[in-house]
Image 1 (cartoon, helix red, strand yellow):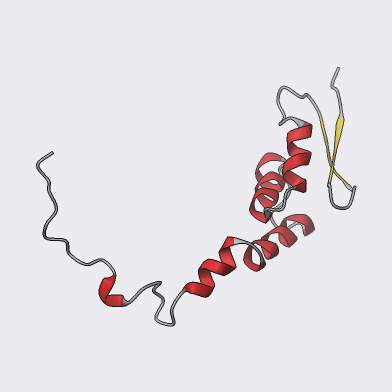
Image 2: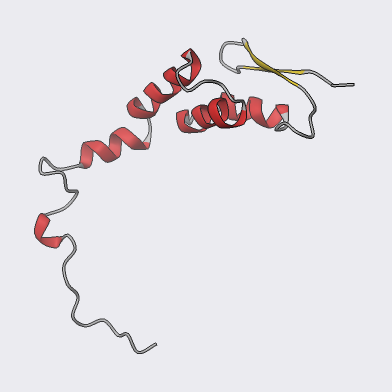
Length: 103
């Protein structure tokens, strides 16, 4: 007998998926917590990898849009210089001559 549990989106209350056989599926409480967290990457990963939702589905598409608009990704990209580097080009990948390799 398969036990069915509903996983609901914390923001909208919409049923994301009915989960069966708890031993084969992620804990529904953990999944609900991941879906409700503020990290859009965690939400996208949960939807697509843990729940098997299609990557081009509405919820996953919205989560990917949020990845590029919120949190660390836009901050990292905003710090990128016009030439594509994050520091002066002369400081990137410079040779270090005084490295002790005798260990």
